[in-house]
Length: 360
Image 1 (cartoon, one colour):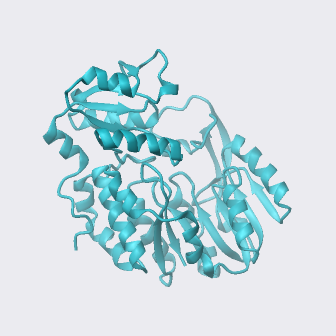
Image 2 (image 1 turned 90 degrees about the vertical axis):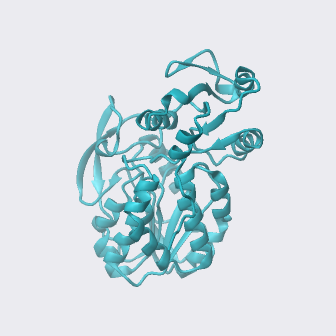
């Protein structure tokens, strides 16, 4: 079985093409993509860095003057070049701009892991092929198999046509979640309370909730949201892991609050935060658990073993933070309980974020 029909990954393709590269974006994603290009001996192909019009300003990035897309086109003139998108977004206006550039230039959105160091190359695919094929064989419906095979092809090639082929309507997940029964909703990575609101409103059978969020600014908004929902909700400012304790985390504002051991960058401002496990929450019965914990999904599952064995909750688990998530998460769940039906869905976003397994 060959889940992906691609014969080379993006980095192999760029090495063969040797055309100049223009990077679109100047954030952490660009740092990672530049690092990969350097490791693959392709950094000399970077010929320009451009940003969206509101983010150009008079500045440098990795030694390149940041310019606009129109200035980038003027710089190259009639010379062909490849665009690599170096950021993530699900905002329609941003995706429209990417589509516009894509209609004019050869464009890719490289898959670089949010956390961890494993790059999803052709070699990585081949070395984990048996596990990847096992996940494919366990998927419950054709929609999941189409999503999975296209997602794997995207991760290898950076070609967003595969993401488009994998897309589902966000509300389509409710068909998969019909099995949610009474009990507690455990929201891991609750952010501002968006998913807390979404699922408690949709499933009144969930009579209480526990919402866990480590980032302190998000947590403040989460608690305000919980108060407005007027339901039995417990909010916890903590990380989720395989065992309870404390860890040092980044004190910077944003979704990137993560344990230092999970980060590849030096973090200057830190604070100590509690670490909880799902099992330590001691809920009477878990009806539904959502895992979106910034690369710690496998650890969180390790700390949820007793709850999963006892309650067999419906679970939605993000599988895009680490390269291994597309097979390791399924393997981990099935080691705990083998009687789940497994689905996969991706909603519109670049790169391949907002991709989840559903265990029903």
